[in-house]
Amino acid sequence: MPRGKPATNRGGGPSPTATRLRRLRRTAALRNWVAETDVDVRRLVYPVFVRPGRGSPEPIPSLPGVLRYTVRDLDALSHRLEEEGVRSVLLFGVARSKDPEGRDAWAADGVVPQAVRAIKRAASDLVVATDVCLCAYTTHGHCGLVRNGVVVNDASVERLGRVAVAHANAGADVVAPSAMMDGQVAGLRDALDRAGHESTAILAYSTKHASSFYGPFRDAEQSTPSFGDRRSYQMDFRNAREALREMERDVAEGADLIMVKPAITSLDLLARARRRFPLPLAAYQVSGEYAMLKAAAASGVVDERAAVEETLGAVRRAGADLIVTYFARDVARWSREAR
Ligand code: PBG
Image (cartoon, rainbow, N blue to C red; front, side, top):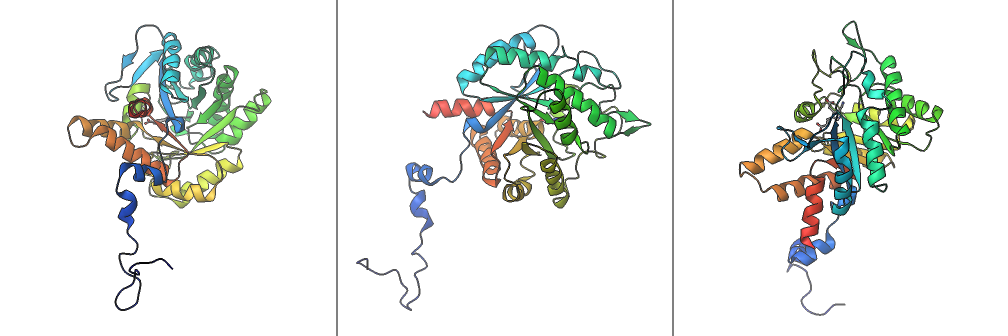
């Protein structure tokens, strides 16, 4: 028996203050010692926009601090990312030319295949993932083919397969289908395997909501739909059970990793997915989430670093293993400064 005053009430029950949760909050050392999650930069994926042509990296007005690079810039960028501690990138291409089918998306010499080669040459240890979609390449800006005003499914999946193979041919480690077509994961797996790319992994954008937080990205990619919206293929944010069905389908179709986006509006889905699926789980903190935090910080409403750490920390706590975020390099810098 421990000596001293027993932690009991005069009435005999346990003292209400026997458990003092503040004991482990007393110093930063104690708090860090018992922290349940962290946002290590090795868990972050940095999105990279690549545009055709030459010239210096271009700013994207609605995404302050994020640039659009040309293929020539990628050698320097890859080295810098490696030095900074960033371990992976997710590539988005800007089309050289657009047409109704989005053919430039699967061109062997397209911007993304060129970018993959350039990055792999410069920094072979960076994990290179590519976004697989048509919206930046089609004149109408939809993520699939349009027939009679409708985004058709199966023909779109066939085209997405070609895009994935073009990226895998260039050496992509991971392809990430984001078009929200039914059967796109199975379609990509089949196309990749037939092309001899059975080792290329698929990161499925499984639960991608039709969201008002993709606006800045569409500026960067010039991919705003010219008519209608994406609600006939992207998910309704009101539905959680359906979100789990999307993930279940992608797992059954052979996804290697599953992803949920946007991040901060999907914490419940991350928590449920974490319990239900053993696969690596990713969350995408999208362009609008980034822009909101930047705007709030710029107007003095929040401290940028603290707010970013809190939002990313909550996404990790909800269950995400990996987070795609435009703040990846900032997090890397902050952790260098802390050392
Ligand atoms: C392509 C795609 C989008 C995003 C990722 N892949 C845009 C969209 O669906 O309109 C959004 C990412 C972001 O906002 O950061 N379909």
